[in-house]
Length: 427
Ligand code: ADP
Image 1 (tube, rainbow, N blue to C red):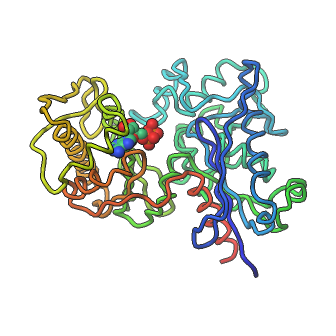
Image 2 (cartoon, helix red, strand yellow):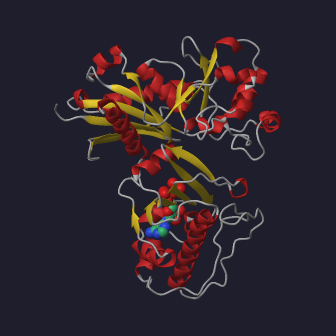
Image 3 (tube, protein in one colour):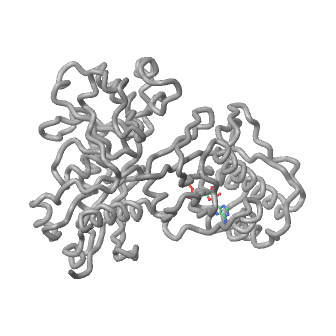
């Protein structure tokens, strides 16, 4: 057999990307598309926009590489929810976007779910489902719930009603039981819930008409996906327990691969299943947003150059944009602490970077106290990853090897899921 390639697509908040890789993970092609803006304010346009973007990404894949593509997978924004006709797949209402809150459904959801369950927040998929169920009076018997990634994948494979256990977590799927829990199955709307498999499982062949239109091979399969943030973690290829990814963007988010599952609603800590392991996550409000308030990106580069990362800064801050922290300190009133400010901006920045590193260390140590696998190595993603002095400071404060993640694009992670699905067929 000749060369085979694997296609991943990421449907993020502002646009979509694709990455085409080989078995070793080398990138053959990649690209991105903004979502087209339709002139009307019609909310149903989101669906048209995603569908148009899906097919224009397929068109952007160089035509000479398409015959080599063995499999395709897609990730989407977590908790972006669609209610569709279970016979035709057509949306029955506008999609509920990831950040939309359906607080109207919260009392009902809280009354059926265990205390502090992931579904007990207004933006959960289950709140969206219950909200639709309570408003809608027709169509209930032929309705089906799908996540954004599920629906886009359905356009490619044509089998309605398949999802993955990462996307399904926020509708209440229990990845440990590997089924929907009894309290959810007892509800009348449980008939709308999709079948759930592991991310990166082959669902079926690419539809004949799409295959011939675009020139994909006859054996090209379509595989279940995941959420965008999990796909971004997968991209870093932190595949062993103890490996972690710290994302230093506007905020600081950590994700650690663990052999045990941990949950703590107080700290907003929860675990996603990844085959026989758990992806433990937590997010702090500290991070780059504070740096951006104080310095331009050019100043950050210049000042960082002058920092001696081997020297510990005595300055002890808690950099926050506004009061309130969730993890690793659960205190909705925690005040930002950025004083005293030394005369030297180099010293000031050093103190801030060092303080954020201490918060990161505290975050990993809290996860361990909660029962997660001890962190052994940290990869970094986000705007802060390029700051080599900060990396050195973090290595010293964490006492661990820290490096920049080679790949951070969610589309790359989705391509790895496509590869996983194709390999399961071969083996
Ligand atoms: P997000 O996607 O979360 O908005 P990014 O991953 O794009 O964020 O990262 C942007 C952040 O990176 C900004 O808040 C900025 O302060 C920070 N940043 C940019 N350059 C540097 C640098 N050299 N050192 C540390 N942080 C930086």
